[in-house]
Length: 131
Image (cartoon, rainbow, N blue to C red):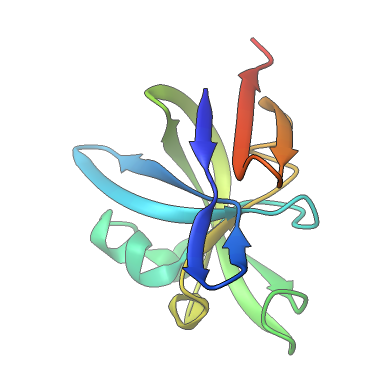
């Protein structure tokens, strides 16, 4: 499956794709940055709340790369749909990540599920399932 890079202004392109996050009967459409430098998938804590997760009841972890200073996120098992394909994963929910504009999908929970090809010249991201 292929996705176009998202344009944020003249000369500013980012590999941001649409996904759906699912927990029980709740489904949220969300945009995420495909980030090969991210260890795991991290989404905004408010998204977790909309999914009816008790965000802070999850396994507490610390991150500093995405925010520039140490902050805590909370791990939960959810379903992520990418291009209609559903995958269960352990994802982090981080308060105040929304100020960055989107969540991130990283090595565990995304790059371990897909072969990812970035083509900046074509402004395209191609995902091929590993299944």
